[in-house]
Length: 412
Image 1: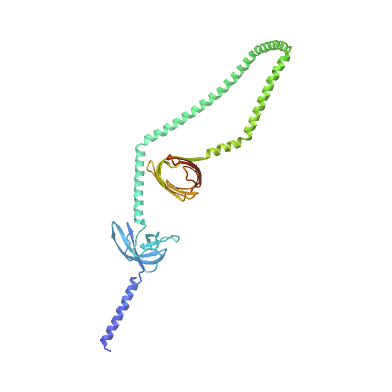
Image 2: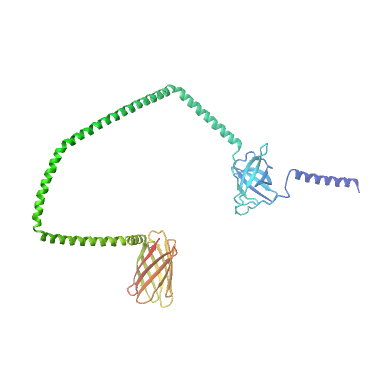
């Protein structure tokens, strides 16, 4: 074989080995890149191209491009293995090692159930607060504190005399307070002696009143003697008086007996009456009253109703009904007077009938029985989907084109 060919083959193999070593040493994972995403930061803190990327502490790729993107810094992260990147991950720039090299850290919540990120998607990174900016903030805060302390010292120095006067006034005030307390104690002691004198004078006055009191008692004794003489006169007519007193006693006993019976009834039924009143107060209803004008022909009639509904408000409805002796169908559309909601309903009469209504985002279902004569009387029983019941009746005069309906429903 030609020597030149051998040399060429050798050089080619050396170049292949050299290129492989370069790719391996430089960690240029061109052939093993699995996925790449873009992350937007406001500040990357001197992050360099080629910085390592860690996913939950495991190295999984590197930074492969840093550029500007709409007032932000866009960093391209290249992954050389399958990494479970899902929505909800947190991407931030951190500092590690002795020399403080920057790297990209990705934290994923193991309980997150977000969808898998696609290749080339753009995410927003978590802004990290660098140590340099933190140090600048601390220095600024220290300067402000020193400036404040200096101003406080200057203020105290300029107003030293005023501060001394304030403390002097405070000392005088304390001294005066002590004097006031001493005077108050002296007054209390004097008040005690005055109180003793008042009690002595009161006892003397009571001694003076004693003779007068004895005279008053003597007069009362004379009055009682006169009253006894009157009693003796009354005793001579004791029969009439006893009869009158007996009547009064019977009336009094009757009143007393009646009062006791009323009290017993009230006490025995007190709890029942309270429960009845509470039940009545807790039972609230929604009432509906409507007046309808209807126009009949052989099989159809149209109507216009003005309805006053405590639960739904005032609204009007227009209905088209097919009536007959078989299955009947009624379609009603309505709207509230204040244009806040609409009503739509339908009735399928199959003797008994089934009605479905939608009013103000509520759905009602009605079960009722009806008959087609010259006069129609319809009793309706409602069950609403919010666990409420109601009943009502409807009277319809076919010949006179008159319709009246009233219903009542329990309210939560």
